[in-house]
Amino acid sequence: MAKAFASQADLSEKRITFDELGPGLFAFTAEGDPNTGVIIGDDSVMVVDTQATPVMAQQVIARIREVTDKPVKHVVLSHYHAVRVLGASAYQPENIIASRGTHDLIVERGQQDYESEVGRFPRLFDSVESVPGLTWPTIVFDKRLTLYLGRREVQILHLGRGHTKGDTVVWLPEEKVLYSGDLVEYEATPYTGDAYLRDWPATLSRLAELGPQKLVPGRGAALKTSAEVAAGIAGTQDFIKRLYAAVGAGVAAGKPLKDIYDETYAALEPDFGKWVIFEHCMPFDVTRAYEEASGIDDSRIWTAVRDLEMWRGLEQRAEFKGAEA
Ligand SMILES: [Zn+2]
Image 1: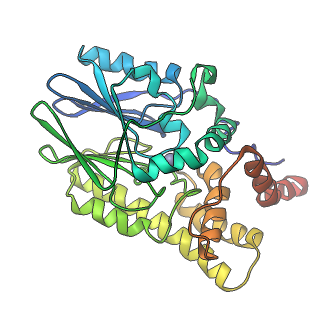
Image 2: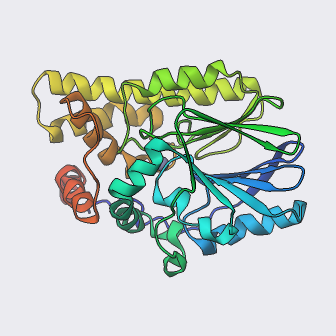
Image 3: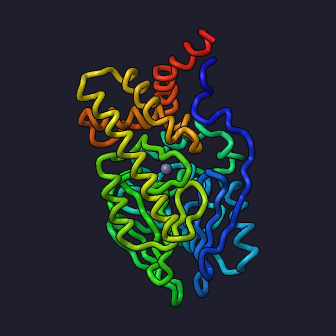
C-alpha cells in the first residue's frame, strides 16, 4: 500500500505544554507540532510564530490569558511557512516583524506555499476558512532589530540561511533564552524543502555562539539546560550534514533522484526514523538536497501539484513493498 501523502494520515490531537523558561518567557509546544514563543514585557506581549490558522491561534491566546492581561502588540515570524504565519490575525498585533528574506519569500511564493501546506498537513490547518489571506509583515529588517518591551531587551536576528533564506531567531541576551524557529528541531525531523543545506550548519554554529542556556526549537520540547540545547543543535546539524552528504555523493556519481532517495532513506532511517514527521519530510528533503547539489541555489517553488508529482515519483518503493507483502 502506498504511504499516505505527507501528513494527511496524521489526525490525532497532540498534548499542549506551556512551559515558563524564565520570568515571562514561555514556550507553547505540542509533541512535535509547530511551536509558538511568548515573551511578556512590561506593558505588552510578543508572540514568536502564530500557528497555522486564527482558530488554532486561539489555543495560544487562551494560555497567554492565563498568565497576563497585557495586549499582544508584536508578532515575529521566524520564517515564511504557512503553518507558522497564517494565524497572525488572531492576535490583532500592532507590528508583524520579519526579515527581508522572509518578506521577499511571502511576495514570491507565499500563496503557493499556503495551498501546498494545507494539502500536506490538514490537521494543523483546523478551520482554514478563518485565514483572512496571506500574513504581511509591517516591519522588515535586514540583519538585526532590537526591541525594548519596557526594560526587557529582545534581539531579532537573521544569522544566515538555513531552513529558508529568511530564518530569524529571537534572542533574550539577559536571560540567555533563544527562540530558534525551524533552524533547530528536537526529536522532530528538519524539513529542508526550501533549505540551504550547505549554509545551515554554519548558521547553527553562529546560533550556538550566542550561548543560549534555554532554547525553544521549531518543533519538539523546549530545551531547558545548556546540555539539552547543545544536543538539540548537534542533532539538527548531524541530520543536515548526513542528508546532504548522502545526496551529494549520489549526485556526484550521476545517479537518478529515485535511487538517491532510496539510498538516503535507508542511510538515515535507522538513526532518525523515530523523529516525528520523518516520513513526511524525507521526499521533500532529498528532492531539495538533490537540487542544491546539482547547482540550483534557490529551491524551486513547491505547489500543491508539484508536491503530489514528486511524492508519486519517490514513494513507488512503498507501493512495491506492499505488492510483495
Ligand atoms: Zn518551516
